[in-house]
Image (cartoon, rainbow, N blue to C red):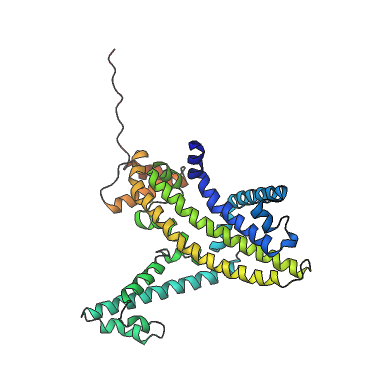
Length: 341
């Protein structure tokens, strides 16, 4: 029994909470909204009166949850603004997100200039353009709770990648993109192609935290995806005349509103995932270098060159520059032990 519990709390827990539980919620909502089309009533589910139907529903939930988990990359890429997005729409959405990042940067600058002014520093020239700006003037007035506002704006700005060239078309895409580019922008380490290696050498606690944080995001992604699918199904059924009541249409509108709420929750849940990934990169890269037989340089500039050489070797091992640029960081060969005859 303890082995079963360990298995559930290990790899199976993320599948159960991240994909099967939200699928159960969506199926239950469908049964409640369109009982005429459901194989079982809510009362039967709660009481277990119709055993065969209950087993069918539970089996369907398990299968649907497993299918959604199998296509999670597709779901993520749609919500991040890549898959199924036309190029023109992607470009427009990226420009919109870039403008939002710049506005947040300006707001944070205005708040910090107001803080400097409150400390008695001479920032009149620097703060003047912000006071003249219609959307930034409110952020130049120092008052109660200003420190909280500064923290909230900084938190929103941290949900964007540092490099503007990495900006994604959606808020969720940017929130995930910043954890994907963290290792690259700080250390020159391509964590995307070396993630399996980092996971192998990372501390067990760090891996558990990363899995738990990812599960929270999976939960909201699966929940909102199911809401969107359910809303479309209800609208199609109403349009086709399969259901004639107005309830499904109202339910579809409510589901779309809830999907928007779950999307924002997913964006915020990535904050915990980002922290877990940062800890794996910050602590695991030293161990990774050791396991790769490399000597960690004593300065950040050389470390970046080393990880760039590793990435080049992994991407294109046939490139003659790859091996040559990495030789300078390899550990010296250990001579074989001489055994007495």
